[in-house]
Length: 64
Image (cartoon, rainbow, N blue to C red):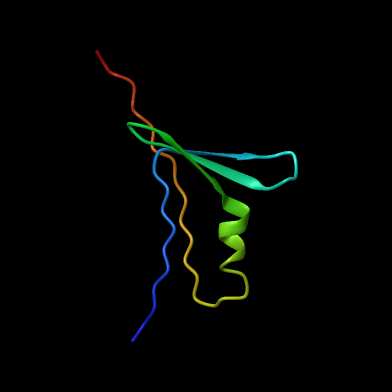
């Protein structure tokens, strides 16, 4: 049996606070959720088998 832990953020922006921690703000239709990404990543330290994927979604300009 395998255990899975997943972090997923959609429509988010990454920044740094005054302490140097990475902060992620996820914008939903109704609100903004703020997470300390540094703390979340620290939960995965020294764990083998971690998969990490990041991307950016952009709209293509109209060709009209």
